Length: 215
Image (cartoon, rainbow, N blue to C red; front, side, top):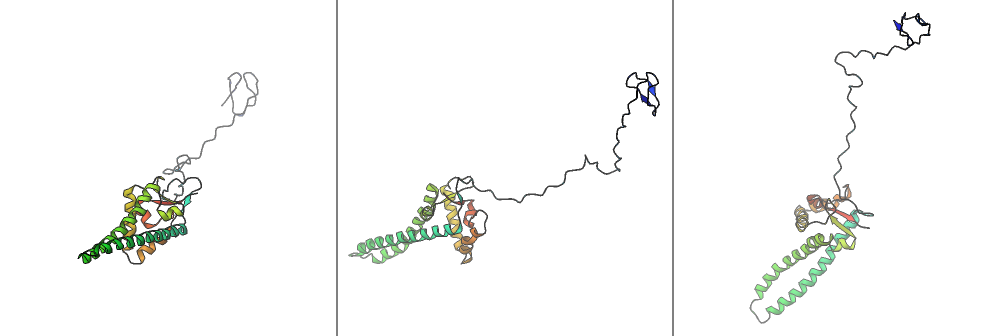
């Protein structure tokens, strides 16, 4: 049945004019009814959203200062060679000076054999101390060893801060430990930045350190 919107009279469905007031009846389209959903299936509204592709995990890195990048492999190698040359030169001078002092002290004394043994112990100890100063103290205080400073490199942690003395020492120990694996250990540690996303060596990964090339 149709109802007149003017007077409210009831009319037949196919009537064009109201039998009560004679007004033309407006045809209102019947509301559409969505098709029935088969039992056990989800309607389009209830259907879960399509799965989104998962992004690959990317290891975190430090915030890069303006103009800074991760140090390239060649820069790190040159810095290492400079460290080796400068530290080696310093140790040579130290050996000559200490050797002269021990030689003078042994003259006129019968402690020549004891002095020789002391020299054997002192030289490795001095080498270790120089290495600790260059690779631990300087890295923790200014962010770079002598060679890294020449190449304008900086060693930082994941937050972009300088390493603590303890972390720098563990980093050096990790590098030394790799050297106990003949050939493979040092070579793998040296070459790792060539394919690593953040240009880290293995001893960098051991403590979460990063080497940056500063502008």
